[in-house]
Image (cartoon, rainbow, N blue to C red; front, side, top):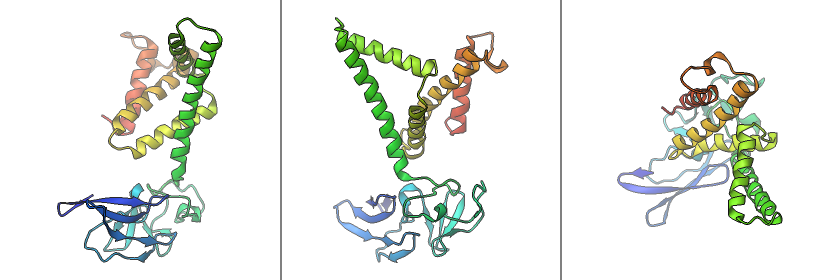
Length: 249
């Protein structure tokens, strides 16, 4: 962040709480300490204004006048360990509870759905391992088959596998969960490439949905237009709807 033409960098702990601010000379200008619920144990004497402290990495915004933290759509009171307004989704029995009373492992950046930060890393690692397994399997198969054009064989194998998974809808449920989880985490956390990630995610989702709408079930009326194949039109429309939903125009 930048304050008074000076740049500072955050030092986060695992759950996303800011522990230090470091200046351009790599000097620690501010240090923070909080209990599990977000109550400050030490307050820096620096004049550097920083509203992102407790779980600041995930957007927890401190209102210094009220001492409340804005978490998406609701304000949170660290002293009480509770939200100040009811849960708009009303999923649990206690509509004011924060992270199901598990603040050391859970966070709630939008004020509606509790998430585990490590889920993102786990989901993307799972998706990456699946890709490695596909490539490795293709290489092993082409090696055993003694293919004359080894890399050509590997490339064709990967294409055929991708076609079977995404075009024909034969994605193992576990791997589909990894892909969706990783995609959603990237959409949420990687802002500079967010539109690109959303577009790719929406296109893959649209392909998967349209396989069942058009190829399997014949397709609803909005997938049957006279100016193009039903499947392509279905993919186009569902991709646009998905991108619009995530705020990409």
